[in-house]
Image (cartoon, rainbow, N blue to C red; front, top):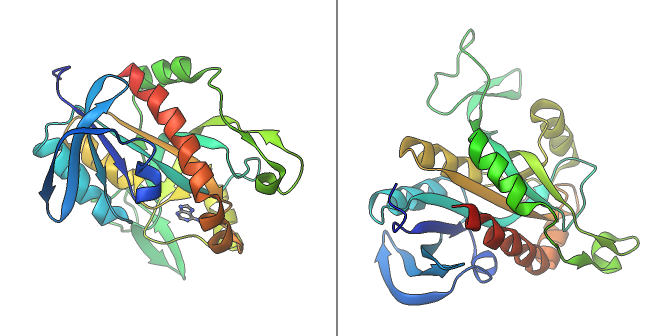
Amino acid sequence: MNDAAPLGILSAIPEELRHLEDRTEGSETLAGLSFHRGRIEGRAAVFVETGIGKVNAALTATILAQHFGCRALIFGGVAGGIDPALGIGDVVVATKLVQHDYGALVDGRIEAYQPGIAPLPGVDRSPGYYMGRTLETNLRAALAGIELPSLAASVTGEAARQASLHFGTVVSGDTFVNCGMTRERMEREFGALAVEMEGAAVAQVAERFGRPWIVVRCLSDLAGVDSHLNFPAFLPVAAKAAAVVVRQAVQVL
Ligand code: ADE
């Protein structure tokens, strides 16, 4: 695509977008959403707060691709941690995104399918949107050695430590995961590093338009019983760390 076309920069809530947005060139309201033209790391960009959830994210991503002609869609924000090796403040770059709540309910359990595919027995059950190999290679190189904020003892609950960056699977769905049992299932079934509520919807739309996507998430909580307390407590620090990575990531685009 045309290099002059803007990047679409999305976050779900104002606390996440705050660290990314640098408005300079005017705004437009569509479908009740405010799109702000500006620049990120010298590149033309359109910034927008999607609102929470997959439908909001898909609607916004569609407008960015169709109306603004965005050449790539980049989501920056926070997530709940799924992989027990990760802690609050660690950052995940999605190389695969799965909509964990699209599928069939069988014996009280959800079986995930790729959105749009008939969720019926005998139909291929390997859901997921994959980052292209070249983009992944470029991103890994661009982000190698990135300096993430150090995490105070109040964040880690133990000794202060350095946040780390990870690449892997992120799952998305229309529920805030505040449940240790679900967290364990998501780790088992998807090998997920983190869970959030928008990323895989953005990937679905981006793929339809043939545009690359990048989803960066910093862990604000660990998707367990304390998540409703940790999320608001660590949202500011996590949103800021995600933005540091997004700013470096867009330099490969
Ligand atoms: N975003 C941040 N924390 C989350 C959680 N626990 N579940 C879903 N989305 C999240």
